[in-house]
Image (cartoon, rainbow, N blue to C red; front, side):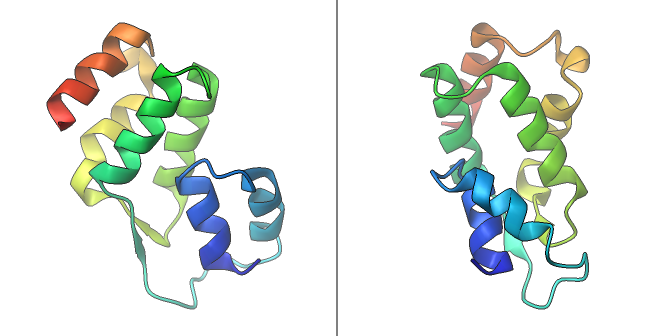
Length: 107
């Protein structure tokens, strides 16, 4: 798995996410390809996984922290959402009600 494939697995909470995390550990921090955009479609996908119970609040917070810390990812279109999810105390915690509100705004 190359760096771009690994990042895509993590961005989408793909089935190979755990392997992707291990694969990324083999690469340095300097990206050798174009920056990957993390947009509202990716955010909606992950929030929907939370709403359906496929992932939990801790997974969602870890995911958003990962998005924030990777130089290879451009999340400028959803920066406010990522910030809120990475620091859930700022939005009153991650809950079904709060995530439902986010999804309502995103649609």
